[in-house]
Length: 424
Image (cartoon, rainbow, N blue to C red; front, side, top):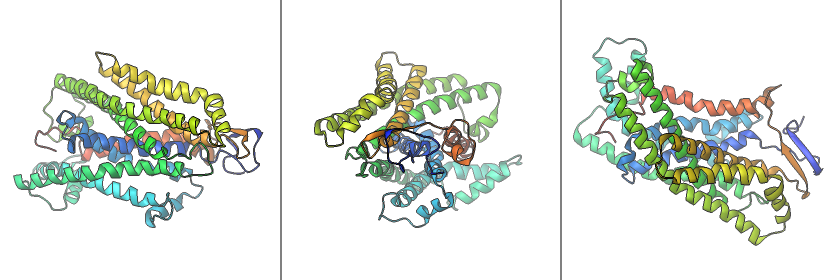
């Protein structure tokens, strides 16, 4: 059976070898890379632009961005018929094709984020080595001590000069990381925008639209997850469940439940204001793209117009622009913004960006090269083989859940809510 045949429904005149080849995993691929880039940009607002009020959520966004990073290439591996070949992109990166450049961009970005985390947490790592080395260790503390000794790289100097050097290095890395993060996601838009054979994808605005929507989705995800984790931390602190509080175990947590609640509300609503700014830019670019297509009205405009204004009207104008853009934007504009409203608006924003990715990837394959036929993608819900699991609901949920599992273990080593006034 041809890849894509099981979930493709054809209508009218479609060539025999045409199917929806790129399914849910290719929808998730730019979505996940966008979350990575957006979370990193949020963390950089504090490190590069010195927005002190975002200090707490910036550290969380940095660690969460690192947890999202391995998942960025996971949809590609699940989509490949031969997943073991996926590593070739990482082992033999080059610029002769857009997808092969992913190896260079991804590795560069990964090194920058890892280095920045190391400089931000170096003081904590050294303190943890001293703390764990001078006590009777139990449970996983022996393993943590060994991990901290390895990742310290022998840099045990905590003098003011050394810490100031860490601070400068963090700022430089964050500054370099912003364009690299934008390039990481912009190149995903570049891949789609450079496909000349597809009328819906072929637009020079595609990389810019992808970058801006990536920042929006990353900030929205950080707002939702920060609020959720802070609620979990308050619940754990009130009940003494310290396994949810690695900073409490490390002895660096000095907040009460009430102080944590105030910080929770303050950081969430403040970050929502920055989300509003980036939403304006993202919505403007997306609307400009539609106006540009209608104004230029190239030869393929008739089929693209039918897809946009008829067949995918609900997905584009109701789900993406209505529920995913206009509604949350109005919610964020209304006075008296609360944490719950900011979180609900952020969830809707995440839905809107996901629909944007869906409409680009699936919508771009929904019309035949004959320009007289259409195809629909029916996502497999109940898998009956490995292929329908990977390209169905099961594979999508696996990709969505993996960052949270990684973050749980990463947070044990680098507490994302580490509270230190002198930390970066």
